[in-house]
Image (cartoon, rainbow, N blue to C red; front, side, top):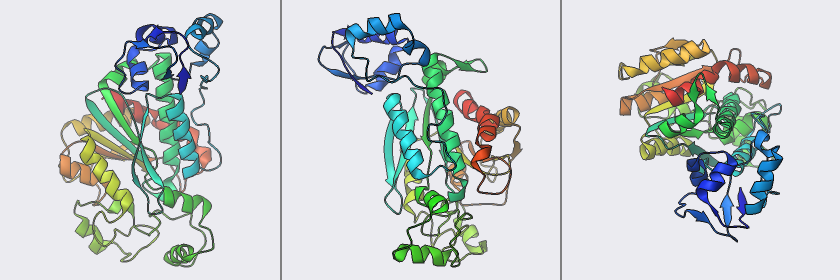
Length: 373
C-alpha cells in the first residue's frame, strides 16, 4: 500500500529495515529507477510481518523515514473472506486485499465475463520459467478458487518471512519462476450456483429454462449462457460437439456452436498466447486425480512433473482420458508443453466448504512443486 516518505531514504536501506529483498521492494513500485525515496513522496510497501510489526525497535527506526500508521500487519490466515461459500464478491475482496497488502503481486484484468464481471490475473515473480494456474472453469467447482487463493497468501507470506517448503526457499523460487494465477475463470456461473439470479428480468427466465425450469442451480457447471467453458477449445472440438448429449445450451457439457465463442474462454486463450507459459495447471473437482497427457503430444518432462505432484498429494496420475476440447488439451496440443488438470477432493460437486482445509493441505505440494519443478 502507499505510504508517505517523511525523510530521504535509499531503496536499499528501506529494504534492509523491512527485512525483505530489495527486489520485492522494487516490484512493489513498478518502474522504480531511483536509488532514493525522496521526502514528501509516496512509496508502495508490503505489509509488515507479524514478527516485524511487533518489533518496537524496528518500528521506531522505520518511523523516522515513513509514516507507519497505514502499514498493516498481515495475519497468517490463508483466506480472509472464507465463509460458507466463495462467491465472486468474496474472491474480488481477497484479490484486493492481496494486491493492496503485497504490491509486488501484480493485478491485471484480462477480460470480462458475459455479465461484464472482471476476469483477473494475479502474477508475481521474476523468473524465466512461466507457470500458470487457474480455478473455477466450472461454476459448481468454486472451492478451487478459495484453495488457489489460500496458496497465494501462503506464498507471499513465505516471501516476507523468508521461509521455505521442503527446503525450497520462497525467495529463490521468486527469482526462478514467474507465476500467473486466474483464481476465478467463470464468475457469473459461480454466482449463479451460490446466489442464483434475481428473479426479475429476461436473463433469469432464460437461465431457468436452460436449467429445465428448476430453480436449484447447484449442479450448474457452464457459464451464464449455458456453454461449458472447458469444452470450448480448438483441440478436436468437433469430436466433442458430435458426441456430447446436449446440442443446445445446458447446465453442463454443451461445447457451444463453435470453439471460443465465450468471452471467458477467449480471454484465457489470449492470456496463454500473450504470456507464453511453460506449463499450465487447471484446478477442478473432484476425484483426487491428475490428468497429464493428450494424444501423446505431451513432452517427456510432463511425466516427471506429474510424478512429483502425485508423490506430494497422494493423487493418482492419469495419462490418457477420452476427452477433447479442454483448456489443458488445447495447451498441450498447441504448445507441446506440460499441461495438467487436477481434480481436487472427493465427493459430489459442489464440494462443501468444510472440505477446504483438507483439500488445501493435501494438495498444497502441487502448488509448490509448480514453482520449483
